[in-house]
Image 1: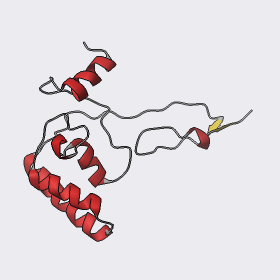
Image 2: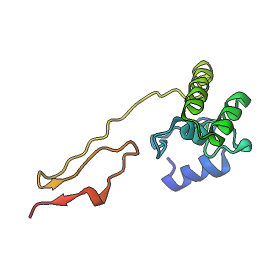
Image 3: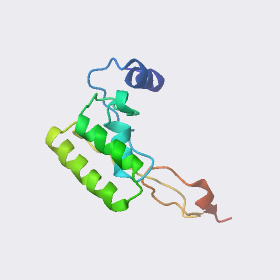
Image 4: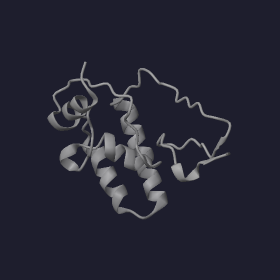
Length: 128
């Protein structure tokens, strides 16, 4: 078993694991183009994580074009095309999904689920 720091180093720096399984990969922003750039764009073209070594020149070009566009319609059309390409390739196949469960006192207010699974501390208040 690897420690979290060893796993991160081997997945993101050494890249020597053939099939690293991770339950923490998620985009911080709710933007499909950003998520594709993060996890599926070829690293040599500007991809950031891509631990599964996926590479498709068409997806790379669509990400680059989307990042350069300020048109919501153009970005949406590119995102749909990227999803179609990736659905055919299946670069990532979830094999398990875990539920996020939170337990907290009824005196705590402001607990809200956010897409990045982070708690917004400034939203919280506690009855005395």
